[in-house]
Length: 164
Image (tube, rainbow, N blue to C red; front, top):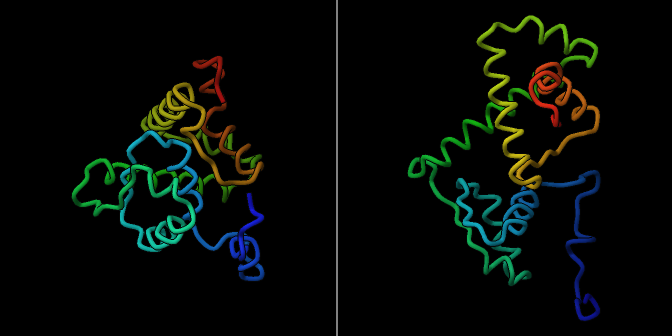
């Protein structure tokens, strides 16, 4: 497939010391994975520029159903922003803790905080049961272990036999 390609700029044109230089690859992967879906993405101008560059090289991407929109006009994008912010703060919180401290910290949650954690765990499990590809994590195995322990620890041992 690559015999006729004159330049390999995706392979060789990179900054030394950078594994990735943006998040467009993750957006691209999700849009292509769910290629029969309609994707409405918040205006992320750097990602939009990357998509425009990719389209020149990947005609399949050009045919996919996606658009970048102003989140003020789309309630669904606003809800997505809130959920992304929630998960960003959650992962920052648990990653600042030692794995040995997670159970103690979790035991000190208020009943309201525990209920919110259970609701989030239910949402994650419901999504995972619907389609394993809905969930996409970009983190180390250690971070994933912290997430499993904190989010799905005792709660899912008692309430969900098939927990993550």
